[in-house]
Length: 216
Image (cartoon, rainbow, N blue to C red):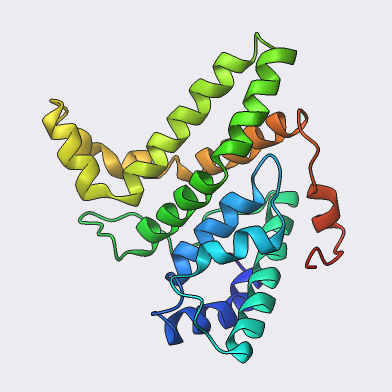
């Protein structure tokens, strides 16, 4: 969330902080919303909203607030994409010694979680591209694989460093700051790639952007 959307996200942030036993961390939820909004085919709210839950044992009042807050933030994320705004929240910055508790790691973890839930959608779109544009499909697969590896690095930097060292790459730690600077561009590439794949599937993007409420 950036700018005005950060203000809109305050209610969601408060809910996540007040109910850590029920909800994933705020930044993880925001990363998940990004991946859902960027999907080649956007799932219905009743499909993706449960992905933010740790437990669904919540009061009707909390559930109502959560539903509204999630939809507000989701629509704000779609508008950021439409207006080509900053996709990575300003609070998500890299620093030496980044841990799993830092905003950047949590946001990237949420992004990967959302992508994991939507992996079949990406695969279906790519399979259709393979049939209809076979010359383009290998590059799309290569690009997505690279992006996911990049996101995974910053979702868990300690693990990435450990794996790099085990593979003989002892330079990664010194390179991470420079690599982190490529994240905003990588997120735009992720959205662009999803858009290229979306043409091979029926999708709902215009419905959400128009402001119509997709909730049942």
